[in-house]
Image (spheres, rainbow, N blue to C red):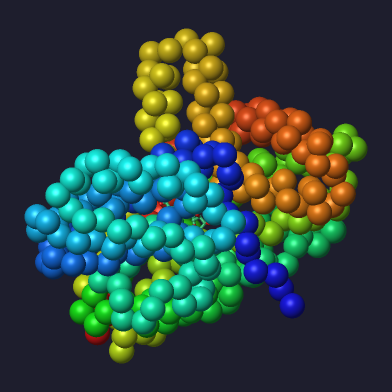
Length: 357
Ligand SMILES: C[S@@+](CC[C@H](N)C(=O)[O-])C[C@H]1O[C@@H](n2cnc3c(N)ncnc32)[C@H](O)[C@@H]1O
């Protein structure tokens, strides 16, 4: 029996502080709200809201489109392990910015691979940068396999589970969203072979690899057990465009695809890096590279950091050593990434607006 993925983004508001790329991803989805006709009493659900900083941007965009004095029920859903307390602290911003609206938020700590709200109650469902997270943990890395080999096999190994997960996600939302209502999806995809050959690096694989090489260094120095290195099962799958579109097409009796677009979203730190390098001498370029690599490492650790810590604990690392070791991992990873040419870290995103038939 494979375990469900139950660990959310890194706590302590870390995700909120390091999610600028996901913010850019979400902003690119917002035009999908533009020609929706909102009533005066709407329910909007964000599936996989995380710690809220991006979710609130989406909710505000939708609230700006409501007729005056409307009532808005806002549903924030994520895994039970999600740090909802960070989101709760942000909610007053919504009330303050919308004094004429009646806003009723609710938080739902439940996996979106289950039914999470009552049938036929949601007008607009939204999800951004979430459904690449698999329901179950993939098989760990076999002990004889290198991190690189594991990552090469990963897309094919995870594709069948990702297909089933998309089915579940669309089926559950089909029950929850009212007929005539909408489901807006921003789904992380994969770069095509041509894009990887000519334009982009596989930024996800490079970042993951760097984290695991940094962890491997700790294991080789005897600081963490070797078996902690075998637990490389980040439950993520970057779908191909074909897989995503054919997955949605399976549900043509529930969902009509009104809009679809694929966009490549770079990390904002890349522009800062390029700017810092312009006309700079070697030392300044080196400093800019280190800073960019640091941002990238913090970005990925804000997503998988708590997961890595949990593997270490399960592998016998004492609780009081975890934070110190984690700091070493972060420093190692920053150095390793600064040595790689990661280029502009991009997220290939597939955006769609589905209408509940
Ligand atoms: C990369 S974050 C994106 C968060 C937010 N939508 C944003 O745009 O910033 C992915 C989120 O999906 C959530 N998630 C992953 N699997 C989930 C599941 N099965 N059910 C609910 N939420 C899930 C994670 O906990 C995390 O908060």
